[in-house]
Structures are given as C-alpha cells and as structure tokens.
Length: 87
Image (cartoon, rainbow, N blue to C red; front, side, top):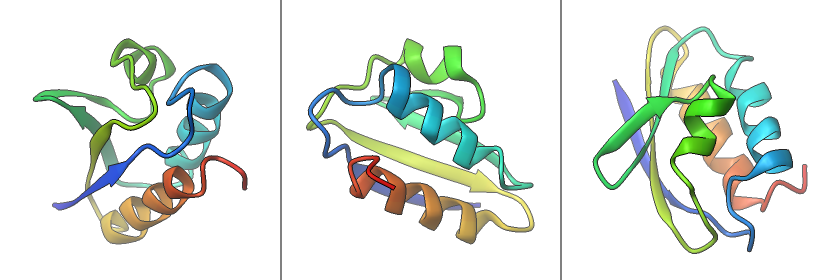
C-alpha cells in the first residue's frame, strides 16, 4: 500500500470537470485506488464517490493505492491534483 497527502490547489476543488479528469486518470492504473478526506474513504475510480466527498480548494486529501502499480498511480494522481487539473 502506498499513500500520499496532497493539497487541492484549484479553487473549485474536485467538482464536475476536475473530478472527471481525476477519475479518468485513476482508471488508467491497475491498482485499487482510494481518496480519503477527514477519515472518509471512497473509490477514486467512482465519480459519485469522489463528488460525495465535497472536496473544495485548499483541502488536504490522501490518495491511497494498493496493487502492482500503486506508487505510479499515487504519484500520477498527486501530480494531476498539484497541477490544478491543467494537464
């Protein structure tokens, strides 16, 4: 299992379009991936799950992965969040 904490940079947080980019990126990996905010954990490959966290800009989240490409998955998603979804 591999975990990293990241600050959501963009102002709107993980809503609609940014969440869609996030989920598409998460689905590129084989590992099981979760997003955690304040002790609540959801499947990072589920749009409804990610949206249900209500992640706004300035929020710290944890990205957790478990599987063959866990480190690559977490690092890729952290990079996407840090970019403000401008990729």
